[in-house]
Amino acid sequence: MSYIKFEKAQIVNLEFSLGREIIRTNRAGSYASTTIVECNTRKYHGLLICPVDELGGGRFVLLSALDVTVVNNDKSFNIGIRKYKGDYYSPKGHKYLEDFGTESIPERLFRVGNVLLKMERLLVHYEEQLLVRYTILEASESMKLQIRPFLAFRSIHDLTHANLAANTKIEQVKNGIKSKMYEGFPSLHMQFSTEAEFIHVPDWYLGVEYIEEQKRGYD
Image (cartoon, one colour):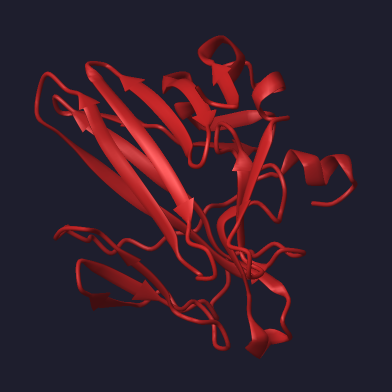
C-alpha cells in the first residue's frame, strides 16, 4: 500500500492537486519536482534539474517536462497539462489520471479509452539520470506512445523566451538523441530501451505561466 496516495476525485480538482507537490533527489545536488498532475507551478519545477559547474554551480532546469500522447484507434490523447494566460489549461491530461501513489517510486495510472497506462519515474542516486518506464496494463487494440520533450536549459531562478541563440539541432545516438541548447551546458541524452522513430520539429512553448510564481509577484 502506498504511503502517499490520491484518487481520481482529488486529482481532477486542480484547486486540490496543484497544491500537492513532490520532489525526488539523487543525493548529489540534482532533483526532479512537479505537482501530482505534472503541471509545473514554479520556475524550479522540472523532471531533471542539475548543478552545472561550468555555469557557476547553480542549478539549472534541463528537462522541464515530457508531453506524452497515447494514440489508440487512430485517436490521440495528450495526458500532459500546462497553464497559460487567462486561467487556461492545455492539454487537460489530468482528466485521464486515475490514481497517484508512491512508495519507493512515484506511480501514476492513466485510463485513456480502453488503455490503462502506468508511468513510473526514478532519479538515479548520485547520477544526473532520470529513468522513465511506461507499462501498458490493458489495451484491447494496438496503440503507441508519442513523447515530446519540453527542454528548458535555464536557471531555476529565470524563465526563457523565444530567442535566436538557442541551438535547436540534435544529434542521433543509440535509440535516441542528444541536445545542448546553449554553450556551457552539458548535453542532454534522451534514449529509449528499444529503437524509436524520432521526428525533429523544434518549437517554442509560448505564454506558459507558473501560478505559484505569480502569487509571489514574479512573471
